[in-house]
Length: 129
Image 1 (cartoon, rainbow, N blue to C red):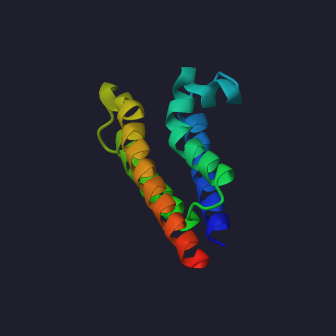
Image 2 (image 1 turned 90 degrees about the vertical axis):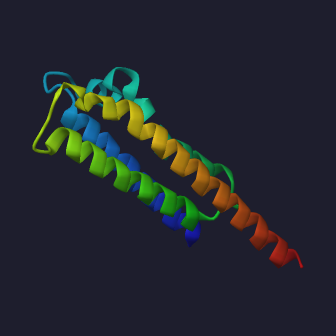
Protein backbone atom coordinates (compact mmCIF):
# COMPACT_ATOMS: atom_id res chain seq x y z
CA UNK A 1 0.00 0.00 0.00
CA UNK A 2 2.79 2.46 0.90
CA UNK A 3 4.69 1.59 -2.24
CA UNK A 4 1.61 2.13 -4.40
CA UNK A 5 1.01 5.49 -2.72
CA UNK A 6 4.60 6.52 -3.41
CA UNK A 7 4.37 5.44 -7.05
CA UNK A 8 1.09 7.27 -7.62
CA UNK A 9 2.19 10.50 -5.95
CA UNK A 10 5.54 10.48 -7.77
CA UNK A 11 3.92 9.76 -11.14
CA UNK A 12 1.41 12.58 -10.61
CA UNK A 13 4.17 15.04 -9.63
CA UNK A 14 6.20 14.01 -12.67
CA UNK A 15 3.17 14.44 -14.92
CA UNK A 16 2.45 17.87 -13.43
CA UNK A 17 5.99 19.02 -14.17
CA UNK A 18 5.82 17.70 -17.73
CA UNK A 19 2.59 19.68 -18.22
CA UNK A 20 4.24 22.75 -16.69
CA UNK A 21 7.14 22.46 -19.12
CA UNK A 22 4.77 22.09 -22.06
CA UNK A 23 2.73 25.14 -20.99
CA UNK A 24 5.75 27.36 -20.39
CA UNK A 25 7.54 26.21 -23.55
CA UNK A 26 7.49 28.02 -26.86
CA UNK A 27 4.14 27.42 -28.52
CA UNK A 28 5.55 27.11 -32.04
CA UNK A 29 7.58 24.02 -31.11
CA UNK A 30 6.26 20.48 -30.84
CA UNK A 31 5.48 18.84 -27.50
CA UNK A 32 8.75 16.95 -27.04
CA UNK A 33 10.85 20.03 -27.76
CA UNK A 34 8.87 22.05 -25.21
CA UNK A 35 9.13 19.33 -22.55
CA UNK A 36 12.84 18.79 -23.06
CA UNK A 37 13.31 22.57 -22.71
CA UNK A 38 16.78 22.47 -24.19
CA UNK A 39 18.02 19.93 -21.66
CA UNK A 40 16.40 21.54 -18.63
CA UNK A 41 13.48 19.14 -18.80
CA UNK A 42 15.58 16.33 -17.36
CA UNK A 43 16.99 18.67 -14.70
CA UNK A 44 13.51 19.85 -13.69
CA UNK A 45 11.91 16.39 -13.70
CA UNK A 46 15.00 14.67 -12.27
CA UNK A 47 13.97 14.66 -8.60
CA UNK A 48 10.75 12.87 -9.49
CA UNK A 49 12.43 10.49 -11.93
CA UNK A 50 14.97 9.53 -9.25
CA UNK A 51 12.20 8.94 -6.71
CA UNK A 52 10.35 6.78 -9.21
CA UNK A 53 13.52 4.81 -9.98
CA UNK A 54 14.20 4.25 -6.27
CA UNK A 55 10.67 3.01 -5.65
CA UNK A 56 10.85 0.64 -8.61
CA UNK A 57 14.34 -0.65 -7.77
CA UNK A 58 14.09 -1.22 -4.01
CA UNK A 59 11.12 -2.96 -2.44
CA UNK A 60 12.18 -2.17 1.13
CA UNK A 61 11.84 1.58 0.78
CA UNK A 62 8.88 3.12 2.55
CA UNK A 63 6.67 4.63 -0.13
CA UNK A 64 5.01 6.93 2.41
CA UNK A 65 8.30 8.72 3.13
CA UNK A 66 9.05 9.06 -0.57
CA UNK A 67 5.50 10.35 -1.19
CA UNK A 68 5.92 12.91 1.61
CA UNK A 69 9.22 14.13 0.15
CA UNK A 70 7.75 14.34 -3.34
CA UNK A 71 4.71 16.26 -2.08
CA UNK A 72 6.91 18.76 -0.23
CA UNK A 73 9.14 19.17 -3.29
CA UNK A 74 6.10 19.56 -5.54
CA UNK A 75 4.57 22.16 -3.22
CA UNK A 76 7.85 24.09 -3.32
CA UNK A 77 7.88 24.04 -7.10
CA UNK A 78 4.22 25.03 -7.42
CA UNK A 79 4.84 28.04 -5.20
CA UNK A 80 8.14 29.04 -6.86
CA UNK A 81 7.02 28.57 -10.46
CA UNK A 82 3.67 30.19 -9.73
CA UNK A 83 5.32 33.26 -8.23
CA UNK A 84 7.90 33.47 -10.99
CA UNK A 85 5.66 33.03 -14.03
CA UNK A 86 2.08 33.72 -12.98
CA UNK A 87 2.56 36.32 -10.25
CA UNK A 88 2.10 40.06 -10.37
CA UNK A 89 5.74 40.91 -11.06
CA UNK A 90 7.25 38.77 -13.83
CA UNK A 91 10.76 39.81 -14.81
CA UNK A 92 13.72 38.55 -16.82
CA UNK A 93 15.27 36.74 -13.86
CA UNK A 94 12.19 34.55 -13.40
CA UNK A 95 13.80 31.78 -15.46
CA UNK A 96 16.42 31.31 -12.74
CA UNK A 97 13.89 29.28 -10.75
CA UNK A 98 14.49 26.50 -13.29
CA UNK A 99 18.07 26.33 -12.02
CA UNK A 100 17.56 26.63 -8.28
CA UNK A 101 14.25 24.93 -7.44
CA UNK A 102 15.49 21.46 -8.54
CA UNK A 103 18.51 21.83 -6.23
CA UNK A 104 16.16 22.14 -3.26
CA UNK A 105 14.00 19.33 -4.61
CA UNK A 106 16.99 17.00 -4.91
CA UNK A 107 17.85 17.79 -1.28
CA UNK A 108 14.30 17.09 -0.12
CA UNK A 109 14.11 13.85 -2.12
CA UNK A 110 17.51 12.75 -0.75
CA UNK A 111 16.34 13.31 2.83
CA UNK A 112 13.06 11.52 2.14
CA UNK A 113 14.93 8.60 0.52
CA UNK A 114 17.24 8.30 3.52
CA UNK A 115 14.23 8.30 5.85
CA UNK A 116 12.49 5.72 3.65
CA UNK A 117 15.56 3.47 3.68
CA UNK A 118 15.91 3.81 7.45
CA UNK A 119 12.23 3.00 7.95
CA UNK A 120 12.44 0.02 5.58
CA UNK A 121 15.53 -1.41 7.31
CA UNK A 122 13.90 -0.94 10.72
CA UNK A 123 10.75 -2.69 9.54
CA UNK A 124 12.78 -5.60 8.12
CA UNK A 125 14.65 -6.01 11.42
CA UNK A 126 11.38 -6.05 13.35
CA UNK A 127 9.93 -8.70 11.06
CA UNK A 128 13.08 -10.82 11.36
CA UNK A 129 13.04 -10.71 15.17
